[in-house]
Each structure stands twice: as structure tokens, then as C-alpha cells.
Image 1 (cartoon, rainbow, N blue to C red):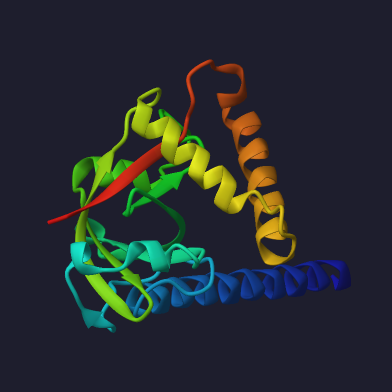
Image 2: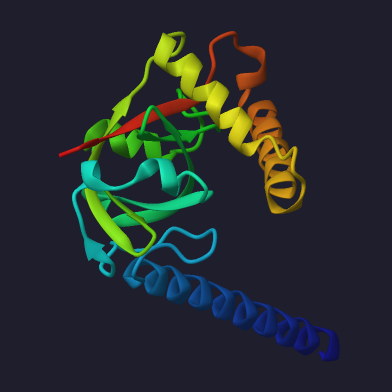
Length: 195
């Protein structure tokens, strides 16, 4: 009898812990979906704060000294923090993980359905559209070379640490999804155009 009641007590405590963890995760997801933008590395809600400006009127060359921008995907009312780079005064963002026929749904699949975005950087918001830059094009090669220079981490500090962590995540992701055995690249590169 004592063993049975101990087992039932243990199962009850385990069920309570699992229920509490589930409630915390659900509550956290709910709060993040209502947040004004992403929170740290977690996707957030729509971008509401920041001065509304015209995308083409922003000084992207000066903004290139920053490493990240916030991007809201209008169709899903969700936002995330992304690295960006500038080529010929135009901003570009990329998804370096397996975005083609991947096992996980990534944000580029959402862009395939609705390319409207809102960009927030330097306390300013601008409406835009993400335009896919084809692999192998001259634009793709030039922008990728610029991204490598910007995020190479040669100067040490935060850029070096983030680049090393990012490369490790991409490498592991490509092994887990089988992308490392395929010849075509799995990344997506987008130009941000005004809308």
C-alpha cells in the first residue's frame, strides 16, 4: 500500500510540474505575441513604436554601422530581430538556415505568402517589401560578399562571438536537416524595397 501511495504522489507532483511548465510556456508565448516587437531572440508582435518614415528616405549607409534591425512580417503580425547589410545604399536581410524544403518552417515561407514588412531601426519604422535575390546572380554574390565582410568578426568582440555562434547553429542545422548533403544552397537573401 505504501509503495502505491508513494507512486501516486510522485505521479501527481510530476503532472503538476508538467502542467506548470506548459502554463508558463503558453503564457510566455501569449505575452511575446502582444509585445511591441521581438524580445531578445524571441519573435514578438507587430512593431508599434517608432517614428513612421519613408524607407527610401532613410540614410542606410550611416545605419550600416548597426548590426541588427527589427522586421515585422505584416501577414503574420509577428516580428524578429535580423542581421542586415547594405549594398549600394539598399538594405538586405537573409535567412542562412535551411529555408528550402526544410523540416522546420522558417520566416521565408511566410514571406512567400505575403512579402509586406515593416522595418524598425534607430527608433524609426518604414514599410517595405522583401524581394528574393536569386542564388548565383551578380546581386546575390555582391551582397553576400558584403555580408561576410560586415559579420566576419575580424575586429573581435561581439561580432566575432555572434558570427561564431551563428556559424555553429547553421552548420548543425544543415546536418540535422540533410542540407549539408545537397548541392544547392538552402539560404534566402532578400532586398528590402519600398511599398
